[in-house]
Image (cartoon, rainbow, N blue to C red):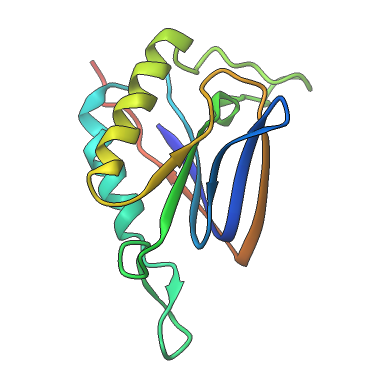
Length: 149
């Protein structure tokens, strides 16, 4: 699984002009699942997201987590994180999980994350407009490869 995490002062997701998810200070999480990913790593990612120390403390150091600042998560599905452009100019998405598998993993991740704090979401499979105001900017790539069978 792959996630791009951005520290934001606010972020929103719209589908067909309707806001479906919106947060204030927190993390915008774009998450994609690979064809070999399973539910075993979802708890790990949820803990990583809520515990990631990327917010400023009183000494202006990145030392606080979203949980510590009472922040929020906006989790948006993003299969294009598995776009492979090593050959040619058109991305190949063969390594991305099939939509029916990815949607289950996405829903499970959201539920696990909601156990630790407020979570808003995009709409799986929809054409989404994502708007954000970076706080920093701080952008972190989180990647965990599925175990070999």
